[in-house]
Image 1: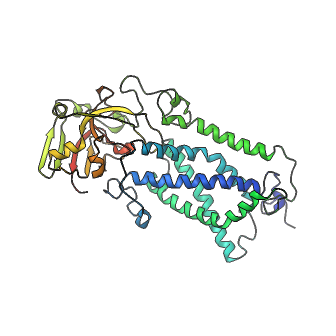
Image 2: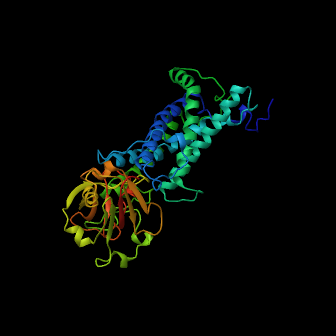
Image 3: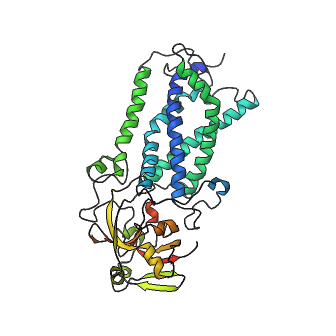
Length: 408
């Protein structure tokens, strides 16, 4: 008989909550939730247009893992806002479910012998990849949302490759366990298996109570994070996120920003009206335009949100400026081409970003000069910034200095 004090002994685990049905319910929730997370994560990666230009590609060695990439659309204009809001908010909401699921199957991690056959060994390896991958993905995702980049390397690279490893293990695990899980859900009475403790302790909470605790924790995380997808009072409910709380200021420019001009190293002497010029390069040469010259070009307006990879977004703001396709026409592109946009920004990622021709062609894609009826503030990108429908916030480059049109 094994020593009951060792975790490898079935008698060590005595909680009466553990059992196939408890694990199966949590597993079905995760089956749906993680599938949605994986799909929205892939779509988020596609939204960066990584195949367009090396400046957008944070995973240059992705190889066949980029097989699905496509030109990111500009309609509906709230597409990225919805996708990333679902991805991040759902990921945070699922944390209690994931932890409960891992707790429910913990006895299996200590089972001896570790492998009874080759098939069993492969299953155990997939389980280790599954557990490790889940913890890695959720941890790096939460740290990114909190803007705590304590992990080595780029978040984009780590999260991208981690997602593929985790989801491969997840699919293998589902293929092996889904039939058993469905049988356990249909079973009305009696449970058996290695998760049922042979000597259960006295219950301190019912299974219904345990499900209520897990669901309540998920609901609490949802309620304290989802508000950052909105402006106004709802944002104040996002207590667990850096971009929660009241709006940063008031007036036309009083909506959420990601990085300030001070953080980006913007020198105000470079943005002064008598100094700053936009350099536009294309097929027919180079055109230089000051802010006053841009204001004399045909101006157009569009109501568009800003949506960030960390999951926060703003409601639609009214932007006014010069259409990107009109700037392309100034340098010889009647049919809009791709464009490389460069910023005055000196620090941080995405000082340069590329946009596809379909994004340039959209009449709502602007080099914005004003927002909500007033000139841009410095933190919102004065003297000029890019705003494109359905694009990730980092592609809406602020403090634009140069635009180069052509095939990238």
